[in-house]
Amino acid sequence: MKRHVDDTLRRLAALDFPQNVPPRAQRPPWEHASEIIDQPRFTRRRVLVAASLTVVAVSSSVVVANKFGPSSTPIATPPLLTIQPASGGSPFTVLTGLADRAGKQPPPGGHGQVFYTKLREWAFGTSVTTAMRFIDAGLAEYHQEVWLNPDGKGRILRVEQGREPAAAGGPSRIDAPFTSQPHPAVADMGKATTEELTARLLEEGKGRTTGDWFETAAKIWTDRLDDPATGAALLHVLASLPDVTVEGATTDRAGRAAIAISTPVEKPGGWFPKQRQYLLVDPETGYLLATESVGLSSDEDAIGGPVDTPATIHYKVWLKSAFVTDTQTRP
Image (cartoon, rainbow, N blue to C red; front, side, top):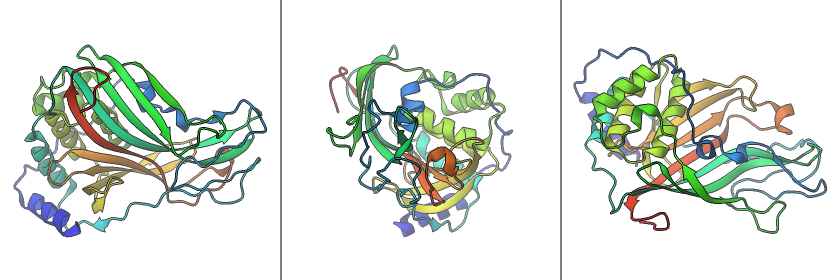
């Protein structure tokens, strides 16, 4: 796998791309929507009905404290990505080359007018009693499927994994009507060129930091999974930014070969004030495969227990997209 990705990086580095990098993107005055996707409920503290109940581990890869009061035992988190260092190529060259590949991919397949997407997501969260006493903490895993009609209305199915139904609160499940509120620059999926989307994103993204853009790219890709122009435009934007590192070859949580890029992120006042955000890119298609967040520092008092850093605190894996005939059909 490393040889395969290294070969790709070398080929990208050898390409003759223009070096006039576009102006740094800046932040727009609007906010991104899709609250169920972008601000998952499991990242907030789960308040239990009965103060005497306890919560079991929320993921098979996580072992958490199972007692009342702040924990003195470090809260376990999934292993960090294993990355083989990159063998060459500037971030601009590598990302521009990958963008070129993304723009040449076919659009999502299938038949019908309903756009279906599937992903898996894990995020760090804590459980507390009604008196806000700490019970446990760790990563909860969710499987998510979304069906969207052309008017942006559809259905979301989001199911927590790894928690027994008899556990406190039981596994959470959302199966409900859903309305997408896409980023305004990419609202017309399949109807704009890569160049048009790139220009729109840079214009509406004035003022954003590189860390903001990594998060924005993940949000947009969740709604526009496997759209060639969107995938290419996002990489062109990322190629224009400072503080982007091409880390090297890795494998995502679904076992797929990837090129990892990263940037530092500051979240003052958060559980993990200093983080590093990763995007994993398919070396052949140029499509985003996954995003990961690594906490570099932690607020033990706010969390309710110690977390040894660096620690994996969130990751999302994009798995499938296709057009289907209705909101009950899977490809």
